[in-house]
Image (cartoon, rainbow, N blue to C red; front, side, top):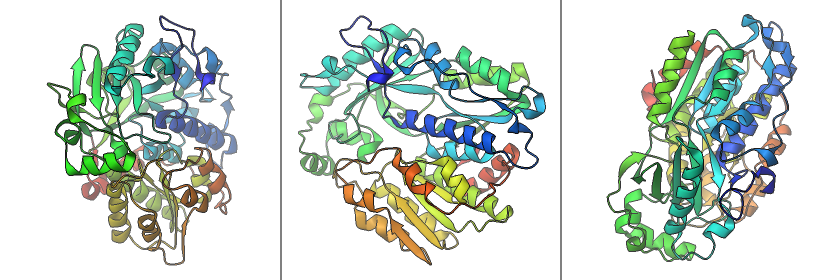
Length: 452
């Protein structure tokens, strides 16, 4: 989208911040939730006194080639609380892109910050190339030349359709950006906690200098090995997508197991740890092997927390992809469970969690259409079956259902839907970070989430 432009560099067209990526959508939703929470306030909340966020730089002027400038734009979305130590944020959540991390931050009334950002390559640099992996490598190397010490990840998925681009680029910081340091110094309370959420998912990757290259991604639900050696599942998915996927054309050679697309660079984690030690803040890590266990752990946390504050905690909303509305979920007193993609594996994990939980009176599913019909994509009937566990009201959003699976639904639609829910006001007071970590640790014993 043109509103995320930077000045033209050594190529004909500018690289753009990807306005449609999951990371960008989560950041905007998280910042909106913090602003709304601080502006609404509640009895006894010392953080009600708030200075508005400084207007971030015009998005058209954000220089994507400068990771520090991008970090400055990201933190500029958040309001600054009263500078008194007691009025600052008691915690900040940083890490992998996961909507449940945003819900966790919203429950505590604190910011969520990503460990990197996504970039959309110029169309002229990828158009006309028969082999998408070759084009991905080319733009990855170009972006690396502009980014100095940052880690560049590029990839190509021949099965991608709809709102998911087949070629993608991401930038991951190797150290805490100066803009993050300034923001944390000014807004994180003395002795406050940095909660680092970390996706430990693995993928086959090849490191080519400062660039990490991968073929395929989790959105298609195909195991990474299948792209290299072929399989019956890959053949069926290729037929369904109308694509010709030849593993020989996408051979990564000496590819090895590495972090997945939302993994963190270990150097970033180490630098964040040094910063917390130097400044007297705490660092806690929440790690998970797949998206589903963390979604279940946060949903359990929300249910217990809402009940402890006198709410029922009996209304479940299933969010998917970019359809996330943390502030509206909080106002309505809903329990959020997030699916990264509408895959069969994600739906099965959700069904097992719902079946093993105390029954919900209401279950609503906001399932983002993936834009592709693969054998790994859960059918609409499967999502309907999830909602049938409700004892009173079961509902799959009609607009999402009409568009599923080949259509599209704007990311803002989730806020529109949840805004129409009856509000369970006033909102509960912010959840204390230590209570949140204790709850996650307890839930993680069964869900596979580790709190350290």
